View 1 (cartoon, protein in one colour):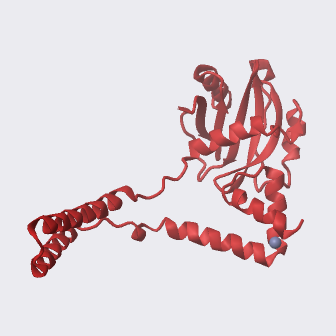
View 2: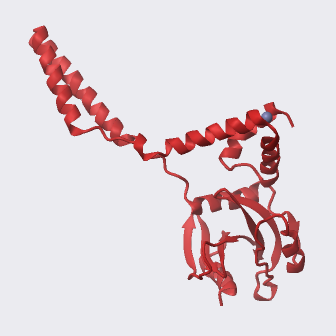
View 3: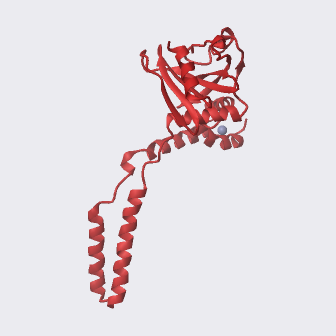
Length: 246
Ligand SMILES: [Zn+2]
């Protein structure tokens, strides 16, 4: 693939908006193309630099006082008519106020939350017709499919007898890392279960949250982080999570 085509993809790549295959394509190109890879690196550097807290300053209160003082001094020295000096003083005050307002308005850009990322990924998997890379209800087919594609072996279980049949799996990107996604069905609902290694071996209780109308159930078990996302109701999604954490 040539560079011109890749230029269009680079921004989407940096935003994590490409599907898995596209991401691999772009990464393969970046590995072989110095021009594109240095461009991506400079974009990454800019993003990191933009998050530096040193960039965000609140104008000190003394600044307004200084501006007022200087403006009124200049006004006096120019011996303007009283109405004109009032206009200038007003302008100065407005300028100082604008400065203060700008300093309040410029805040650190809000990074998308991990929960939002997962919901976005869930929606994308449903929209892009890229729900599954491996389609199988057999855990003995799905589990080995991940071999060599990830730096960990995700736990894969079928729960057909509990009403949550395994449908397949795919690879996805979340928070700059490759994760395993297991797809389960609950009647007509689709559950995307994201799995990746946890920081430690501990276990956690099951937590629920709702983002953009989608329910997310999170837990940690045997050194893995789990996030189940679905339009399924929280109660049934919790039951699903409890199959993993009896
Ligand atoms: Zn290139």
